[in-house]
Image (cartoon, rainbow, N blue to C red; front, side, top):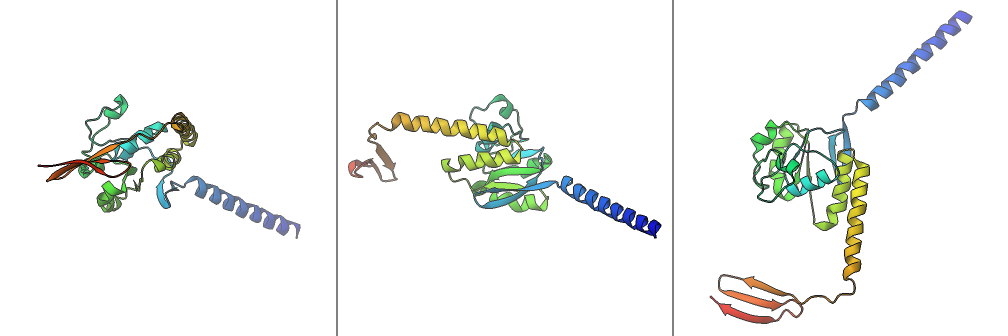
Length: 209
């Protein structure tokens, strides 16, 4: 009876050990993670090593959080040497997809309003894509946060965001007592050029071509 009890106890211990090992293996073998930007959830590599970027504005933010890329968009703007050295994939709105696929990226970063047309091709090649629905300056902090999480550089992202927000506050404090400037807006059409007072909206002058 005692021998049977010992055998049963040993069997239970073996089962528990196997179950424990199985749970650990499942957790450690996860190769993807889910990140959210502006309400959209994206499944991305857990530790991406080859990030292809289709927009240089996104590229600048990626490098701000110490991320690295394998591509950039073509531009006549002056870039930092490490960005200039990256392979250029063509203009932002006209990406060379053959060249992009040849880089074998494990994730692609772009802009929804520029790169949505490439999404199906990326999906057919099993390449996850994050196409940001970027809505101007108000999305800078969420994007920096996202890129910090993507690259596993959360602390760096927090540091960059803190500096960014501090600088914005300094500018606000510096101009809070200044009077708003009067601005003239020129509007040219095929038949007429108008100059309008920004405050009143009144036409200052008009000239027919």
